[in-house]
Image (tube, rainbow, N blue to C red; front, side, top):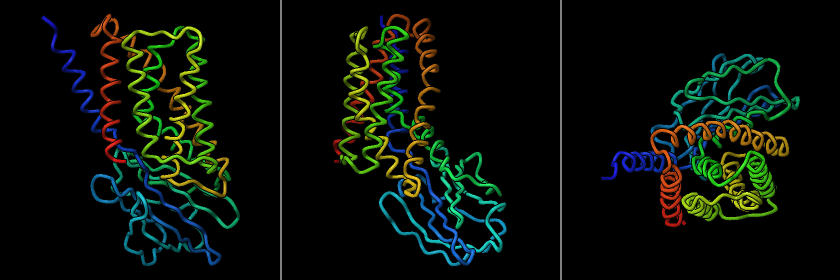
Length: 317
């Protein structure tokens, strides 16, 4: 008699990941610009598809002027605001109340002298103090890149599946490198507006890459010579997906190159973080719960989620 526990676990995981992570994790954004009179004006942007009430932003040691009611702009609820911090906002605290596990907030402040501050507030670190010494580089995009990779379950699932079809450590290195180069190319070209592909179609094609990968995993197909070719081709699609997320978040056009660079480096760091974890997970499951059937169950999981997302994304076109 077949063991019903394994299919049950696969079903539970499928339902959990499918419903929890099928939507993009867009961060909120606070954009402030120092004016000639020493005040600061800008926008507070909160994702319109976030669950619950919008998070609130307040400033310790600063007086806030009248704030406009939020209006819908794309995927965000946008409120215009202005504040007066007497001498400077440097050294002052920014408080964000109502963030969630899947909704962080990127804070960007541009100063008159050309310097800028960027920080990332989370549900566990919702109070940010603006330092006296600020950077000239948009380093906040690095953490957004890490967050997007770790929060983008479809991208992580593709990396997970690659571990099943690549033979040898050298081939794995070439494959991951090819995937990195490919999505870096399309990410850059898309953000620079040299190519333009509808985001909804891109997301549907990414789901198709998961279905193809699931078939390869189920057949225990091992690429021993040129696995990087497959990874490069599919990496071009995934790069368009990364670009869509970055465009939704908004990019600092004053430092376009550095914003793009830090975001891409963040994606790679997130990818390097999950690779050993995935490898250990596969090793652990193949020796305990799933044993020799690890490929088949991984195929069900990857292919099931890919099919779920494909149907959902095609219907949304």
